[in-house]
Length: 171
Image 1 (tube, rainbow, N blue to C red):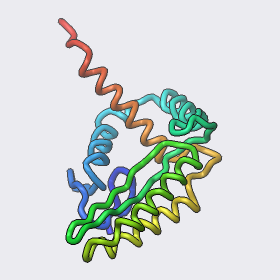
Image 2: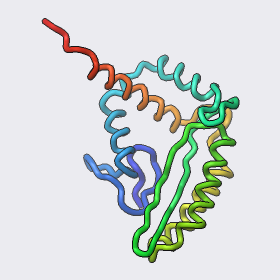
Image 3: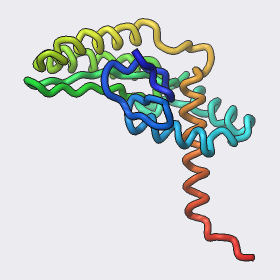
Image 4: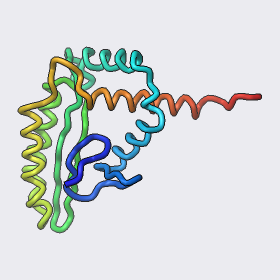
């Protein structure tokens, strides 16, 4: 099975394609475009300062102490022939991440099975992904590469926004 060219998640079905790469969805495709266009030019010291602020700061979800990192939540919803599945990323403390993953597991267990055949196949996959994420989670001793990449993209997006907002230079 292919992996997302941005976040590395295994793509079961579908995805967005561009430039010979496959991405989970349009959001990963946009993030990859920002990453390749601007985000790589973020100076290392600026990136490390931003990563440290997010990682060691208070949780954006509950306001409690960090460390904070990227936590992925997997969900599936089905109705007859329609099945929708998603992977959502959240920057938070481990406790908030596990709570959202547990909620994703319960949601998938209740609403994932009702599509044939995709719901029956994808529900156990998404539930297993959530359970694995709740058990392992990111290493609490240092910021993950996923967090670094997301912060780099956020900084790159800010750079692009400031370039668009700035009036063109006169000669």
